Image (cartoon, rainbow, N blue to C red):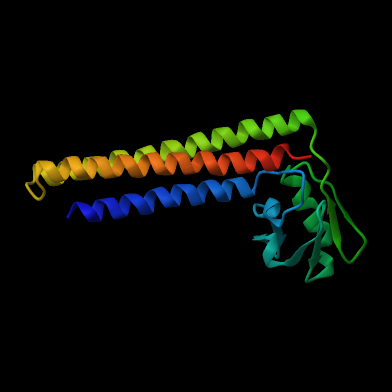
Length: 185
């Protein structure tokens, strides 16, 4: 019975790691990534539409993103949406493509990014600990309802703590990789 609680706990913690990775993909590093534009919405016939649904996004060079809209009349709207997204990027178009040159990050900006990454990592750790707390509460309820023994409760709590320690360590590893990527010149 307590194995179900542990399986749910593992899934919840894995989701926290995935959410952290997704957040990290939006953090700007010195190189181009189309993930930077995930949150950009373009007004497409009165509907805010993700940029990736109205254009082809390509990274032809490490510091350049090109956007080729499926309708050329969208180019001004795309430029406006990118500027409005406040990503610190300046789009330029030639009537066919929108080009975004990714400027190199300054040392101060890199340090700010590392602080942001550490804050995101801490939030992920809090989420993992919340999953642990909920799992422990579920186990205690099962023991109170006499569905598991006290020994199974202790065993389950130990397994959940081991899971928690492993996933917290994993968040630190993911953070270290992203931090290295941001500090890389």
